[in-house]
Length: 471
Image 1 (cartoon, rainbow, N blue to C red):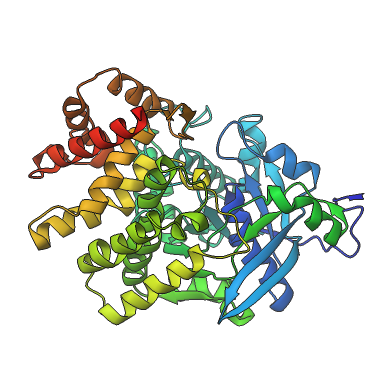
Image 2 (image 1 turned 180 degrees about the vertical axis):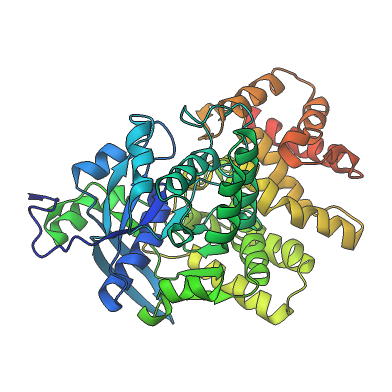
């Protein structure tokens, strides 16, 4: 079987690098890069993507070994019919790792063709770290790294406004573009950068609030040999994804003019306000995912599909969406229910093995963004606690214990958060443990012990879960 690289594949065109992408994980490669690759085929976009590894240890070497080439396999049900399609992605140029060479990273700012920055560094990625106080050293945060690169570009081109960039973050936080810009300006102040740079950020660059939607389980480990035989290459970076895709970009007409995704027949919407799309998607689809993971995992399930088909967990999830999430939303009920039904169908996709463990990354920050607003809004509207969402919160606390029934739980979060839960679980007093977690303002941006009855309800659920573990 042939090795996959630019020497073994004929007819690959090297295009100008127009996009700088922070993140080399499955989602961006199976969503953004797939979209750009499709635009290259069907429009005159003619642009390649340079990846930046946002953390010290990532997939950079694997991607560079294949010279940026990999396949995306779309599998799912569309309009009642099974659909499978495989595409070789040729628009990715490779990965630069700033942790190996800060200088090489900053040099990317000198690219005359660069027009866009995209990112997906998880909900925890768009954050400010005041300890990043020396721009001569690699900042730890993604916004810090981006600020350093933008300043390099400003300095290189003497503040030329034509060299500003369209910045399109994909992190699943509200007003992600506005938040990213706000933190960049914080770094500009921290580093005492000139007023001309701040003016250039404000006048020469655009920051779009966005919403992304595609289920991307990632590398199809169980079927990879069959896939490689079909494509004829040893591709160690295959990305499995569903056919459904939606990218809502709240941006100026100038962004739309330079990013001709709609011309390519792609479901990329340029809108004046992405809020209704975001609320619907984050609360129902992402909220369902995040609510499901700890409950289903502790129940012994390992994939989304088997969870929704399970006689206990399937009804739990459906009741959570229909009875506790939808009643907190103000969009038309028929529209919400149709979207919810579509979501359940997507979760049942027989072609995709979506591991619960792959959704578990940074579950605390995800719960805060995706689930907590529904829980609090339900209390506000109904005057009582949503029992399923409370159960999910309790299961999350048990999940972060790190093990259940003698088996490790796939906790993936900041070391500080992981260590915090180790300390919490040193106590045998479950009510005290519940109270400590709920009042952690760093997690939730509020003291949840002030929500009437919540601590007692979570404590009761913790007790039930711990009792089941002892059986």
